[in-house]
Structure formats: structure tokens, C-alpha cells
Amino acid sequence: MIPDQAGPGTPSAADKFDDENYPGYTMGRAADMLGTTQGFLRSLDEAGLITPQRSAGGHRRYSRHQLRLAARARELVDRGTPIDAACRIITLEDQLHEAQRRNTELTTSD
Image (cartoon, rainbow, N blue to C red; front, side, top):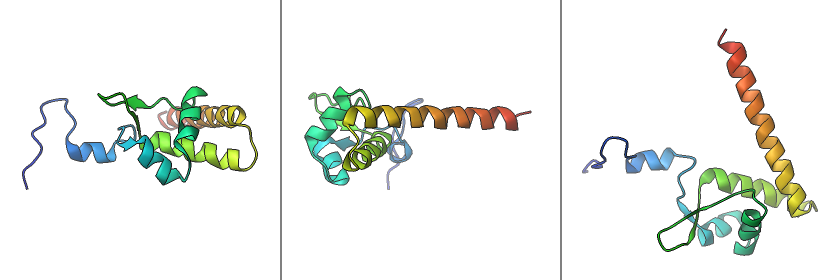
């Protein structure tokens, strides 16, 4: 096997597999994985929950982190929560999680 020829600061192919934010999924693949429509993913983009990166051809590309957010949104919407409210709930959950992480980090570094 030939190793990646990545230069300094360039992530290797193996690094991309572990990168939660690497936009490795097309819109079609993401919709298939989530069991939803491409329109649902576009609505999450319009609501500001996820902002997919764009390929050179302008196609949306999603990361694993974005797919987890979209899956949570779908769960809430399937339970009857309006999409705008679901996006707000997920944003607040994410902010709470980050605040708890920082709090733990600060209390354990003493």
C-alpha cells in the first residue's frame, strides 16, 4: 500500500475518515442515510441549522456532525415539532453541551 503524499498541514485520506467536520456526504447520500428527502435537508439549511459546504460544482456536501444534527431535527419533526422550533431546540442543546464541556474543562484543570 502506498502512503498518502500529503504535505505539511494537508490532512491525509485516513485523517479525513476520522474528521467529524469533513464534508464527505452528498445530499442524495445524506438523505438516504437519514431516511428523509433532499428537500428536508434544504429546509434545515434555510433555517440555519446546518450550512453544508459546496463542491467545486456547487453541490451540497455534508459532514457526519451535520448529519447527526439533521437526524435529531428529523426526530423532533417526526414527533410534531415545527421545523423552526426543532432547529432552535437543537441549537440550544448544542450550546448547553458546549457550556457543560467548558465548565468541566475549567473545573478539572485546577
